[in-house]
Image (cartoon, rainbow over all chains, first blue to last red; front, side):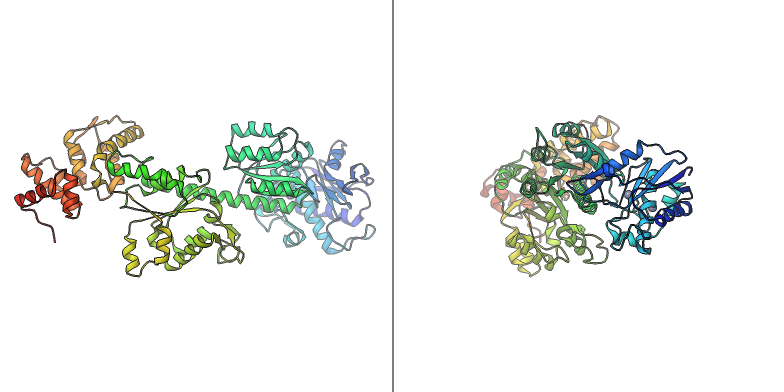
Length: 174
Length: 448
Ligand SMILES: [Zn+2]
Ligand SMILES: [Zn+2]
């Protein structure tokens, strides 16, 4: 697999969260990765009725904004994301698209925007980020519940996943 | 979720269509979208879909209107209604109209996953039911009931009448007489015709499988029950259940089914809450169930439940008049299937076939014709082509003596009618006195 991934902080996101994502993109996906300069909170995507941020709107904005030096972008946020019809999402990416989103917001209670996230939240963030990043490389959900591409119904299911891909998905990533 | 589904998202809002499209694609489902009910119907006309996700509030054609049309024209397509919070009443209406499920907007991603898993499970069951149906069709291999004999006319007259009522029917008759076809015909003529006809051969299934197929089970109810599963009795919703060889079921199953027939409720295995069911039971048996009851091998109360209406299908040897008609039907069928042109039987062959006792009934006759057609090198089948049926009567050394023929014929009819002199005389078209004279003249004796 070729290319490099830019990890893009949007709004107030702990720095360690972004550098951890970049490190795991390198070690698990085997891709070049670098943390990019942060963007401001995505106020343009705020939905007053739902008091949440529309993930589809953010993705569309990022897709229209070319970032030189990387093939795909994984944006890390700390706001409550939703996709119309769904109550919320942990992350979002279009299959084969250029950008993925992942939010810390629903990954745990004890989160402070200024402080580094605890080990449990960090673990969840890395899993969601790698899962969404793999969608950018055309991977779909996997039946194997010991594979990062397995769809997790909730945080509990997410916690049961290992931070790795099954042999099939690994082969598809190559 | 292993099952790949063909899904259509019907919503007038583009953003909703797009989000769900992306969502389903990630699960490898085949997805299409439609912006209106009309567009959805247009697409349905071209290819079948497994499931439609339909927004309830759409201009021109509402989701409920679309649901109604889909349920009428494509009853195999599942419909899930998507509705905004606060319109639960219409969601309930939708369920009454046959929607598989509803989702209140916005919903959690895992709720969507659960709904899809449920539908995939139902479709798996539907597939299995088609498979069972296919097996039966393969086993009987004639697609409609054929007969012009008086015996069959009686059955033809009874079918629509029996179809009117909702009582349990017990169809008796030897193997190969077409009991399944009669059950299907009753279903097709009844008000249940638009719901499934599910056929299960009780003799061919182990008890535990039969139980879980009929009643369904909860996840973890037994080893291997890895998810909740609806049983046929639940899935059939309003249709007809045909239990072939009901004489084979265990005493426990008789009790369980008796309870279902009385209470119209079932319990999935491992579940405590009863579910309402609605179906009509048609069963069939080769056994003499009255005798089984008398000898204590079959429950009397259950027997009365399933035997409200009785239909007896006559064996082929009691409707020999139908043999030429059936031969013509099967000749046409197998000539077509083998692309051979075999369309005649000699008079001699016809005589042989009319005289043969046909222990396997219509099914055996069909197999015989199929085999003769496959092996035949000419357009016409002669007696030799049926030599494989064996037996002296099939050899073309039939008596040329009319008296000898009469003797054999009278003897045969007497045997068929169990030596009931009145019945045999009636079948022969003579009176009892004449028959007695013939019995004496030919020295016929009732076999021990
Ligand atoms: Zn995913
Ligand atoms: Zn995998």
